[in-house]
Amino acid sequence: MKSVARYLLAPALLLAGACAVSSSSSSSSSSMPAADMSMSPPSPDPRVGLRPGTMARYARDTTKKVIVQPAAEAAWNMRLLSNVTPAEPFVGVTHSDLAFTGKYAIQGNYDGYQVWDISNPRAPRLYDEYVCRGSQSDVSVYRNLIFVSGEATSGRLDCGMQGVEDSVGRERFRGIRIFDATDLAHPKYIASVQTCRGSHTHTVVEDPSDKANVYVYISGSSAVRPAAELAGCSDLAPDVDPNGEKFRIEVIQIPLAHPENAHVVSKPGILTALAPAPRNTARVLQDSIERVAAAAARGGGAGGRGGRPAGRGGPPSGPVQCHD
Image 1 (cartoon, rainbow, N blue to C red):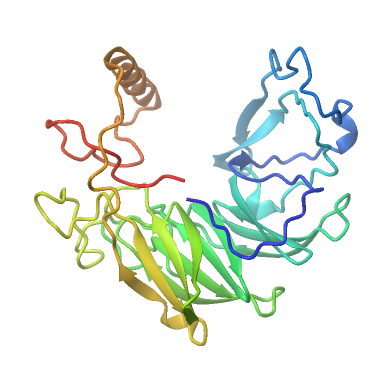
Image 2 (cartoon, rainbow, N blue to C red):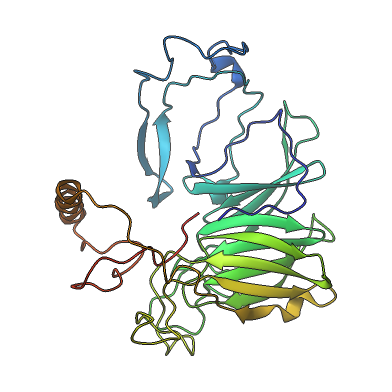
């Protein structure tokens, strides 16, 4: 799901955006090959045979990685105007999303978000930043509000960077964070709406018949948290528990006059009746073997981001969440 809400786009500017990893070094647009601005697709395709980049552990924080050798680049009908190095708290962490308001771009990052003044697209200027760990940190802007998705188990209500060590923690945050950005240079963290699977991405929705509220549709792709951490959460399939969290999205209502009172108003099971996707048995087997081997090489288990599949041991089911 992707957030779409009254954005003012800046099509001339290409910033490091969705699912890009930040580097500790910067590069200028002069390092780019000459842009092909023709209307006809280039032939041969310049993407074929591009040199891959390399990465290494970040010396100041070995849990992060930075780019050592940038990958080769190719472009068609667009031109890179600038490439700006992120500030220190965001180096070596994935950039997840971009939202736009006026002359500003808000860049989501697994460790929070940054606000860039892009009035001069050839020289973006860092306007503000908010450090608040909890991937994926997809961002949306609606009037004076900023919405930020969080589903990582390391996210905290107080935005602390130390994570949550216990498997059940009342200080853990997974859901939607809401900021009052009336003063964009000094946003205020005003609400945390906790959900059972967190929010991987989200979509902002207006109801033409309801001018008092705006709504955020979310779907988490992480495992369902235990009921001991958030009351009412259930990891069971709907045929076992009609209130189970799988196969659902969550709808959050935000009163515009009092956004601090935002809350979940419904959990429609829109995915319950979807048929399983077609399966290539040989491919599925090979993928499973490769995942197990990769997990063993890392010294970890083979569990995926989405947790245990619904109906393990039973017939295949449809998707249990919306990813993007």
